[in-house]
Image (cartoon, rainbow, N blue to C red; front, top):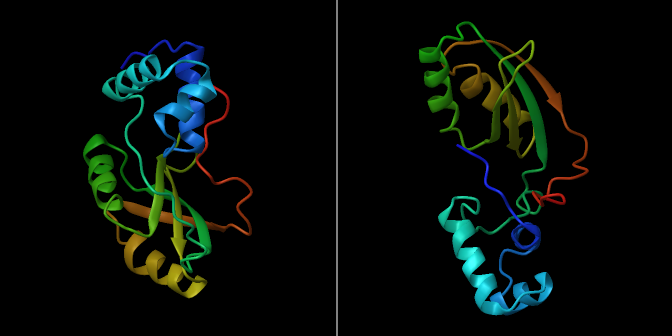
Length: 156
């Protein structure tokens, strides 16, 4: 996919929406310095072009009791395309795994896993992650504190 050229108004829209996805068109227009109609036209274009992929509620996982975060390095025993596809499909189905990144590193994947406790994490690791297709080994790093985790874009 080609990158899309964004002007300062498009970038301003994305910055504001990344902070407040529920902002009204009138307030968004005021914040970026355009009137409502061109702001709404730009917003619809950003959605149609797939730059804005959706809107959702952000929940506080700590308030839900999910304050144990671990990052897991995963090494696979096979990195051919069929094995990667099989691993990708299986890991995407595990709700405890918030993020999965294929890495260019000494390991193949980095997972962000969120659970209620170390005991819960050990069960997820032992019963689910270690059982994923082609997993050869894992290494775990437990987060002590999230310094930035809000998903807000930096300046575009």
